Image (cartoon, rainbow, N blue to C red; front, side, top):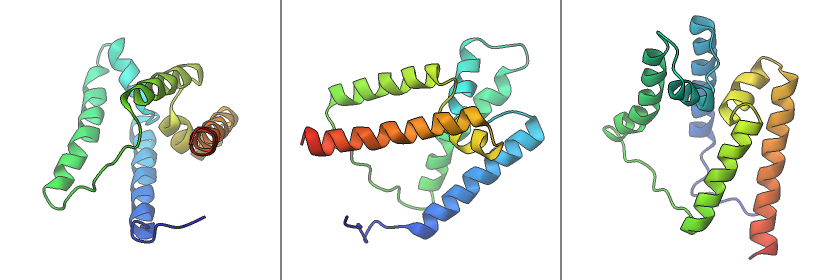
Length: 143
């Protein structure tokens, strides 16, 4: 295993994790809601009365945060080493898994594990295993 020391950023990664954890904890403490992105977005597809404002604000914050960051610093370059068909298939599989798993990685991995949810533990283990298996197959069997 080789570590890409140029792009190895433990301190900024730790800071990002602390910010995400604090935001998820504050969201559940002050609003009584789980900060699972698929649930928040899904709630906009079938909105309940008085439920649209906070959902839109949350999603706009997800879009606005990198834009605000870009006013102070350069955004890191994003490179995706996959063709369009692989990206489309991956997106569909993620959506399918989110639906069958009754939540996404943010809902289960961040919020569910912190609440010691057994269902979230199983879901997160499944996410991780699927990711490991996919990387292994794509890099070693199809390379």
